[in-house]
Image (spheres, rainbow, N blue to C red):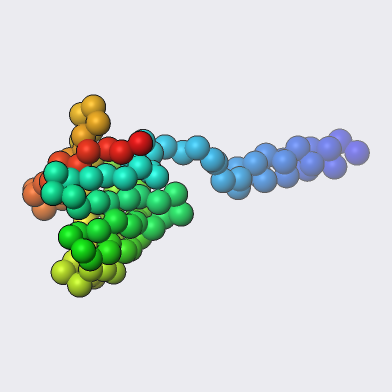
Length: 115
């Protein structure tokens, strides 16, 4: 009987280790679902479902993103000018403005964070 009780406890611990945790933070948590807008009207949006949206001029931005605690990577499928490219960067937030410092040393334009 003790053996079965021990197995039950070990099984419970093993199953709890397999549970996914909710609320794990990423570097863009404060930006998800908020429109990011440049001075010239271009927009970018990190959607809660892992997709990106927005516009560059009159062209729609489409693609996906992944993020961790250190950086975010966007894989864009549209518009044509950026399709097939991956942009990995670290957001630098100052008040209601964010700039993305890219792996290649370049920076994004400044985006005003919408609410």
